[in-house]
Length: 236
Image 1 (cartoon, one colour):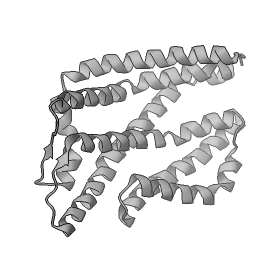
Image 2 (cartoon, helix red, strand yellow):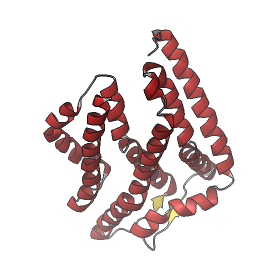
Image 3 (spheres, rainbow, N blue to C red):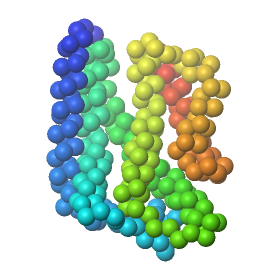
Image 4 (cartoon, helix red, strand yellow):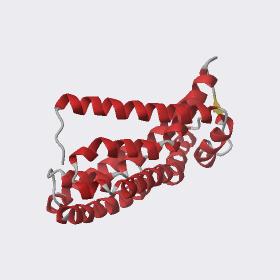
């Protein structure tokens, strides 16, 4: 396990961030030519929840900014293995030699969890959310015209946010290895975790019991997996 000074850590972090930005940027440039096709895919939750209603643009330059926004989002998804690899390279100097060999499983599981969380938010949470939001317009007798920018902002925040939340088991591994927690810490904090998870579910989902339950259940399962990961990591 090698020791690095504070400024060496900062230089290493800057190096890894620059590589990530270059990777995401290259993927975003490639994705820019396919923004129309990607937008059709991204509109699916809206079409499900606001069936028969249109998305609108309200500014002269909004179309171009939306294409840039979509390109960066797609670039991040495509480059996510590179991003997680660079994250591994940043923390690797603080690991034992045997642990450094786990780079392939780390990149695979980190990417898989991130994309699974993004898929879950996009395919499960967003359609339920937009269905709920549409019902509120119908109760008031108002015809909704949703701004495309606001729709994409919510869509991207939900998918990326849940992608990061699904990294809970990976975070558990590194916190255990660093000595910050043990599996007993997570077990003892279970009651607080349950409350916290339902608070997160309430924030990220519409204010109805079904959608909160849909989000809370997989988060509770991930917390259980995190306990198991911490237990295994603590024996290593």
